[in-house]
Image (cartoon, rainbow, N blue to C red; front, side, top):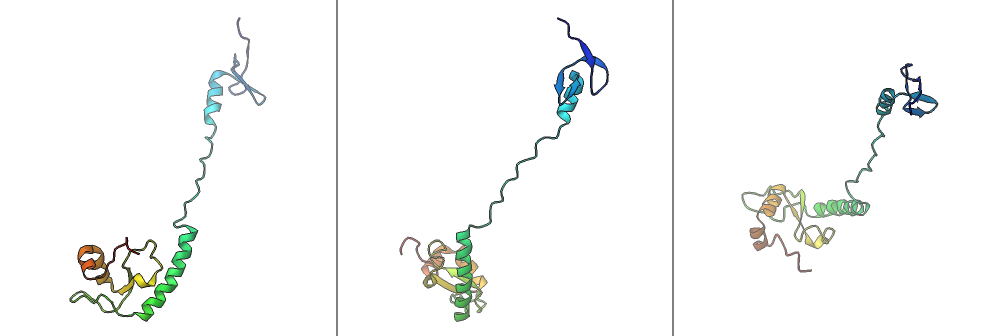
Length: 138
């Protein structure tokens, strides 16, 4: 069977019609051009993951208020390491870490930046000096 040739809506030449689409008749060549010229579907917009959860944001707000009060009540460095200490406390050191003891003021220590860095980089010595406590015991 021989296909009849008709006028292509795109190139206006008499050719075998490949596709009838939206009222137009297209030859194979013109249809491929039309088909691939279409814009690809827009990419799905991914939802931005928040920097912190709502629960953590509330805890941080409480922590900020408690921290301010604690540093006001303890303005001097509690570590007072000779040859290192800057005297004025600006950091809160969490002796048991920040996990479940994040808001437990009894595990806090007001320290200067230099003493705090030393405590964090020398965990064994800091434990011996009483600046760190085991996270296992409650």
